[in-house]
Image (cartoon, rainbow, N blue to C red; front, side):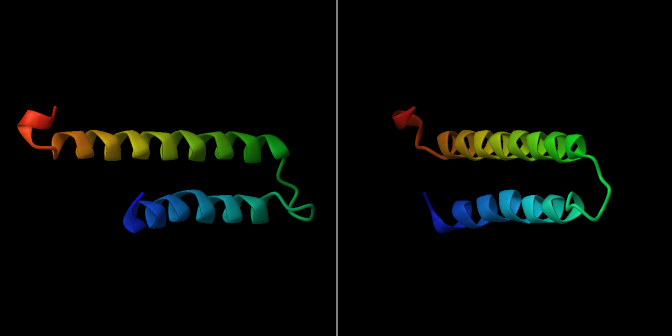
Length: 66
């Protein structure tokens, strides 16, 4: 995996996870279902981002490599 993909992946997963963790702390009063739903949304968005990168990689291949 290239460094740019790892950087985007860490930003896409790490920052939202840390923000959600701060929101669902025991003193905030936010229910845990919000955390679960948001975490599912983050995982889905990372999956879609990786699909787009893979499609871009395949499109950038030379025509005889398809």
